[in-house]
Length: 349
Image 1 (cartoon, helix red, strand yellow):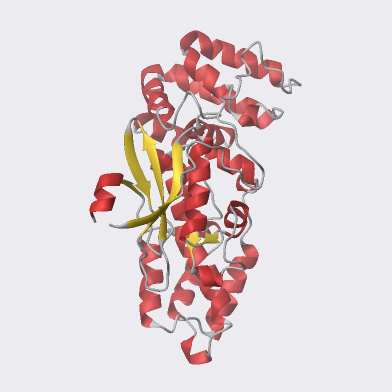
Image 2 (cartoon, rainbow, N blue to C red):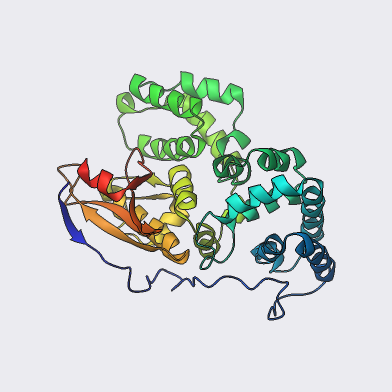
């Protein structure tokens, strides 16, 4: 594949809306240098972590790096910490193996904290013991994120009856087939974003070219009015820091972001904050957002321009990054995201 302009940002700090994001790990609350909030039940949590430290010092220290325990500890978070200690003591070998797999997600020496461990902590705060035990018995980052990263998922707000009526009231056969396919494959975030933007665009089309009937529009309004944002995903900087590995930002961008034609954006170029707030962008905007997240996690990553996919474009943007001496591509700024691919294989296609 022939490429054009290579925007090398690997040697400089990318300036986003909120400035540079550090790649210095958090100081654990068990560390003597920790100077954050220490009001109750802080001392109770440190006692729990010190007990865990005697059995698994790395796990205890990594729990102490979680922002959930560094911004003021709630009773719920104290109980969640106690629950993890209990479950660890019940099956130390299996819990330890699960944690080691979590620990390898991202660059431990550069990321702020271990994001999969935070996801497990979210389960413990809600006392989701079966979900935690499932991970202990058979760890899967994908399944863990499916259980914990509620990116405004439609299943929380749509009933089976609404879904059936909505599908019935899509009047373009090809579009109906795509919606059925997304739902059957549980691509809920892609479904949600597609539904939102198709609904918005329909108002500008002639009646015979609209995807949704009048009945479908009523159902969509009911769904969108019921849909609420998870506060865990409302802060731009916290989100960028959380997406600190290729598999994490790949999951987020596939499920939360939607590619749109650059001509539908308010300006020719939009910044990363716009992509985050609106969940949309062209290939360049989405790639820049992904690259920023990877750099915040300590990766050498940058937006890279290759040959255009369409005749109306001058180029197509992807993300190039290095991990353990190998070069990879993330190409999620398109209608059907490609995910993570080895650089050589991608360029050969």
